[in-house]
Amino acid sequence: MRVLFVASECGPLIKTGGLADVVWSLPRALGSAGVEARIMMPAYPGVAARLEGAESREIGDVFGYSARLITGTVAERSMILLDAPGLFDRPGNPYTDPDGADWADNHSRFAALGLAAAAVALDGIGGWVPDAVHAHDWQAGLVPVYLRHAGRASPPTAITIHNVAFQGLFPATALSALHLPAESFHPEGIEFHGQIGFLKGGLAYADRITTVSPTYARELMTPEFGMGLEGMLRHRRRDLVGILNGADLEIWDPGTDAALPAIYSVSNRTGKTKNRKALAERYGLELSEDRPLFCVISRLTEQKGLDILLQVLPHLVETGARLAVLGSGDKVLEEGFAAAAAQHPGRIGVEIGYDEELAHLLQAGSDAIVVPSRFEPCGLTQLYGLRYGTLPVVGRTGGLADTIIDANPAAIRAGVATGFQFAPVEQEPLRAVIDRVCAAYADRALWQRMMVSAMRQPVGWDEAALAYRALYQDLVKGTAEL
Ligand code: ADP
Ligand code: GLC
Image (cartoon, rainbow, N blue to C red; front, side, top):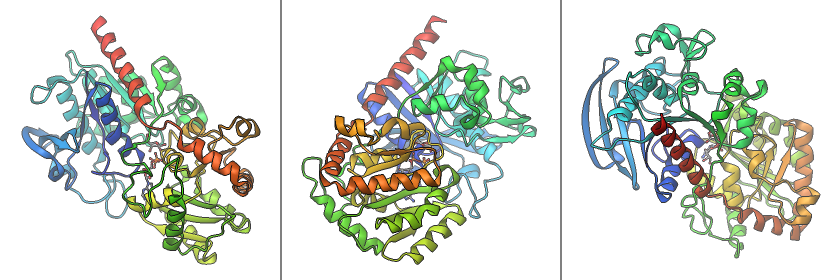
């Protein structure tokens, strides 16, 4: 089984969030399950240089920009890069200019990715022809659209919604420039309230739709979470499935993690104390033995609910707990957290920025990780928290609800609790859950039991890989029967 992955981010090559983690790690797990996935993405600056065995093929112009495809491998992953310097040779964030505004030609940039990927899906590359195509998020949303209108038999398609908040909406005037057929511009096609919707088009024309947790799959069909696409997703509910993401245990394993001052494992957790001290030192925090050290590792956006955490910080400090934050994003939140750190030295530490290595130290050195998201399709940091025995404290939504077993009395009695859930995501429930965490932390035996349960959770990619393989097999079988 050969599957073409199409995405705008991938692992250590280019990353703004969890999408990159998934696109990097899932193909590897699929490989172990007998599925050969190749990852197609733009050749952002520096990416092509990372390829081993690179070979390049001219493909002529895409929307007037000269382009070629570069194949090769990175850490045993097969990659196909769309190298169109006029569109992608821009430094920094893949979507925004240096001032943080979306690039004005994002529609051309990601339509080009879609069009080039559709060509690879139809004709293959170097003799490799995919049996199915798997598009990720709005940036790859046009692949199923171009394939549907190719006028010839094409491989079946699946699209994964990693976050419905990002839909890729552009003016309808771009239709012909993007080679999109006028007959696709209707509510059952790519049209979304008078605009071109890249994600909308993908959802309309893909054979299957997946998202990254079962709860988010249900939530997506409601007005509260569907962001205007709930109606069409309800309409396609038979083709919609939620498959939980996993954690990459080659990258996130406290037993082998090279970024840590001390490694540890579920059977020997003593190293965690050393990491805790190192983390406190790095953040200038005065540790208290009988109070938990919380951390946050996050984009600072509305989705993540960190404005609510900010409001609750005086209470957190009052309990004697500590907090270490790593994040970047909204200026108001960045300033809010920086001000909180200045106001509570030794209690709250904040680093504004993006730092992969520091994220590992935070996971290893903290007692609990707070993820107070208003919505969360899956969430990965709580999975990493489980693996590192850093108990997740999460809003009860999306993948957070599906991955963390709340320490309610029944779960504690059964010995299965792995973290703490709260709902709704508002100040009072967050305050209350912080109190619950502090009480559980004070009960040393309980906390240790929970750490062991958390660290033993099977959070790897194996189960998801089997679910995706079954989906691809179904898709291919479905096409063969047509
Ligand atoms: P989302 O994709 O919505 O941002 P996820 O939890 O799925 O949320 O994935 C976030 C990923 O980005 C994780 O790998 C997390 O460790 C990482 N991350 C987020 N913010 C930072 C940061 N400031 N520094 C380092 N890593 C970060
Ligand atoms: C999105 C979601 C996040 C999910 C990630 C990977 O960025 O916000 O919840 O874990 O995609 O699927």
